[in-house]
Amino acid sequence: MNTVTLYPTHKKVKVRKPDGGHLNEHGEPVVMTAFWHRRVRDGSVTQDAPQDSIDMAKDSAKPKGSK
Image (cartoon, rainbow, N blue to C red; front, top):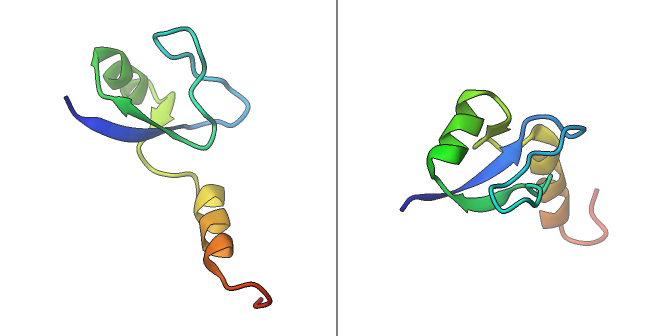
């Protein structure tokens, strides 16, 4: 099975997982089942990291004391 990291498309809307929990708002690796294919198709989740997550990752990669 294919595993990918999915992200909710809207921060204010929680995406329910098949086990009843919620998808992590910062993304989470999941096995691409029919359930997740439907969520991608209906626009609830995306494989693209949200822009603010990318900005946070860039900031954390900078050495301490740099701007």
